[in-house]
Image 1: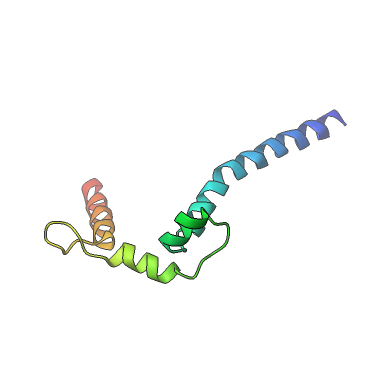
Image 2: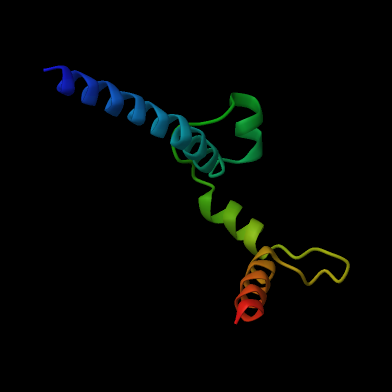
Length: 88
C-alpha cells in the first residue's frame, strides 16, 4: 500500500515537471503562428493561428546580412555541414 502511494506521488511530480517544461514551448510555438498585431493586442495564444506558412516562410527564406543573400535556412545547412565534416 505504501509503495503504491509513493509511486503515485512520484509519477504526479514527474508529470508536473514535464508539463512545466513543455507548456512554455507549446505556447511559444503556437503563438508564432499568429501575426504580430494579434500577439501584441491579445497576448500569447494557446491555439494555432492562420499565419503559420507566411510567418515560417518569412523567417526561413527572408534574405539579410551585408550581401542580402543570407537566409536562416542557409545558415542552418552551413552550420550542420561544417560540424559534420569537422569531426570526421
